[in-house]
Image (cartoon, rainbow, N blue to C red; front, top):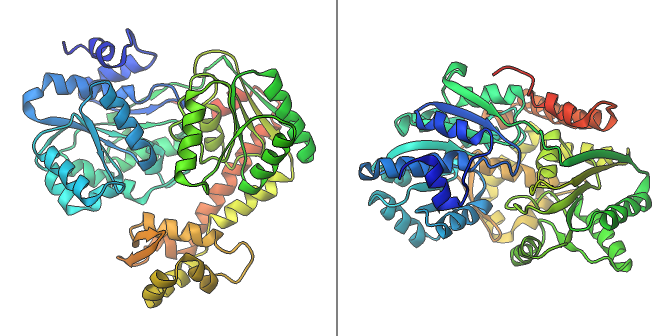
Length: 476
């Protein structure tokens, strides 16, 4: 049975599709391209998984498969494990694999195994991967987190800009681009970066019409008012909830205060050991009625239906981040509160973040030339030594973290930071050496923060504000 509904029932247990899933699936199965903008938890994945399985059933003898491009290494294993548990022949290939595991999966791909293969865009730098991929027919190309394609997006990934070339290499398959957050500007750039035109790509925008989500902003002054607001939400909204913080230090201070008040809670942030983060996430997902204090590192893989509240203890850095985070509330359709605590002084923190996240061209050039001259010492003495050589100001390490991450994204360096084993593999690209380009990026970050401030101050309907920000009133 190759009917999409029958396949959905067989593998996922659903008898019907949510709007606009059914329309997207029919559109894609007819061989047409699509851009899907759907809220976090709205069911984006089924928009490519059902066509992938349908095409695999219909073309079983052709050796075809669906390729899914995603930047989220941390999520791939969870996604593939969930599919395999449902009987889907799926796998991933990324840098988390050992060489032996990678070569085995390459061999399996070449033999015609797997209906879905998840990879990062960086994988297409590897000649051995392209050689293996050439032995398969690609039925469908799904580009997840598609906002990363656009230089105007909030998490730009340089390797995504090669998608026109990648699509050509794959034989220009039917393509879906999927994201939860894309302004009209970003949507246009996504289509352009895919090597397609607006008339070739149909846009499906699910909107944010979730009547069970209640959005509000509470003006507060200082930590005492914040802790009072958090505890009131905790007591008035029984069930699981997330309180997001910008800084780990602030999160830990609030954790100490809640502990003193005998309010049980979990703590999650990016500097915890990996096994601790995994334990906290598993506990939150599998057990009822947990409060977790978290930085935005707590997000990927959080697909729990019964989250009754999401509180932002600080103003987020962008509407995109805010929208993704509140989207984790109330996925079961029951009432959920999304409350932002606004303390004007928190703007200074976000402005400082913008500084940390936007090193100057001079900083990039200084770092590049230092790595070029002292790579052996850097690998011998480690990151802390590199920080001491590069930084002379307070907050040392912050801009260096950003710069090293960007050098890695652009394919300038390869290797590990822990332990430090770097290799310099290409020159510094123009976008990191041109201050005019970097100034545009900084200004864009400032505009995103200003849009969030406008949201805080608006007297209009808050969902309507978000609706307009993401261009749901525009044609496309």
